[in-house]
Amino acid sequence: MAAPSTYTISDLAREFDLTTRAIRFYEDMGLLQPERSGPGGRNRIYTTRDRTRLKLTLRAKRLGLSLTEARELIDMYDSPRDTGPQLRKFPAIPAQHRSQLEEQLAELQANLDEVRTHEKEARALLARMDKPVKS
Figure 1: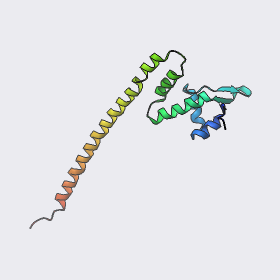
Figure 2: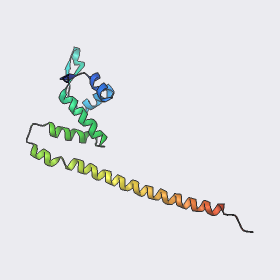
Figure 3: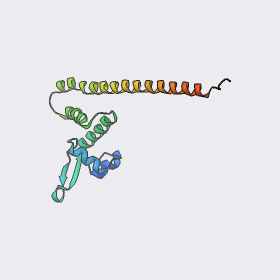
Figure 4: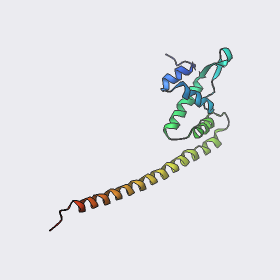
């Protein structure tokens, strides 16, 4: 069975386990651009392009990228222009994100080391307190 060429907001919400509110938020952020139909353009019609953009947005989010970074990356590949400059720019975005994650990891490691030190000191104090006093 072939995949449909258009989707409703409910179709996408069901498929990606999202609320319709989340999908509208992604639309407000410029990640999705559905066509409008019905009275006053109330009905959103999403294309396979929108579905792919939503899938890529969710993947970027899982990787920890901001929605702005996700939009930059997705827009970069969605553009019909020459892909050379786009491909040269692409590694900078994940590299910057990786650098931020590595800094956070280093901070977490330092915090863990400090917690371990305090735990060790507390255990040593408790051990001294629990020693029987010689008379």
